[in-house]
Image (cartoon, rainbow, N blue to C red):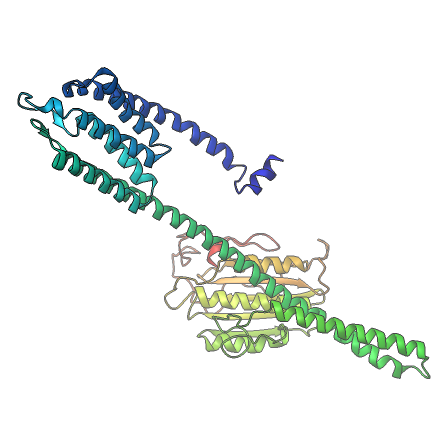
Length: 479
């Protein structure tokens, strides 16, 4: 219940104890400020003796200054009013005592304790309220000082009006600067929070769009088959009954309605201009919104687009392709697409080999690139390419392996079961024979060079290779 209240109140249950700790940490500061206020009150009362004020008035004006310092923590503007009023009352009441006072006269109209108290109050005002209000308080203080000293005046005294106003101005300037810095930091934190939330929301929406498109294309295929079979079925039976015709017509009508609903939902969720920065989708600048999800038959177009982007790609297909389910074909296409996209990002100018092996249990995919031949620029991707490959393969009962090659290249190999169900461990075909970790067109390492010396950031450490469904040895944030 407490956790629910914290969420509804906008505060995390983890932040509540932290706020209580911060609240308790303020207590020593409050105690120190109260002692300072008491010292100001006592010093003001003693200094008022030079003004020849009565005991009651001296105590009243002195403690008014001290109370204003404490009150400024919660009510800055009333505290400023109380501090200024106490100083004006003391200065006007002390004016008769200035007649015939021996030189040098007392500090007037601002005694030292009053200057200190009013400076603390103005600092709090500048930190707690808007800049215009703090400037108005400074202006009101300066105007009141000019009226008391310039218009009303006194006989024999040491003028403190100009010095006090200068000190107050510096204090307000410092307080306003700190307030502006705090507001800037708060706005920056809020903007970063909003940016992170917007980025997360956009990522979720993009993922939903992708899932909606893929779901539509997979389901639409089966629904279309059902509709066609329901339409053709009456012609395959001699003298079909009217009930059979009506049932088949109802099946076909329901299938067509389901297709129409799918198209309407997809029209809402589909992006208007899907981005394809590497041109790995359909031919052209991007994938058309209504283009069906790709299959293995479109790998030739994908490889041609990759060659046009500046990579030398060699493709090799072994075996006859059986009838894979749409999900397997789509995942195979996406894995090859992401591997080629990674090669474009991280190995510009390299040579890439794409191998597709159709086996009895499923399809083996292998994408290997040589070391980059040009400068590697910062990647514009989100850094989740390998994670997405592994999730796609795991969803279908397959596995993905990603690792560097011996000569500084990179290899991604995957296996997707034919029926989308993971094979038992004793029947898992694993990695196909002939898998090479050395790119065939790479020059051999120089004599005396340890294996793996060409790998960036690894020195003489040999590359670690893994097969099966183990995690890749490279950092997923960079591929």
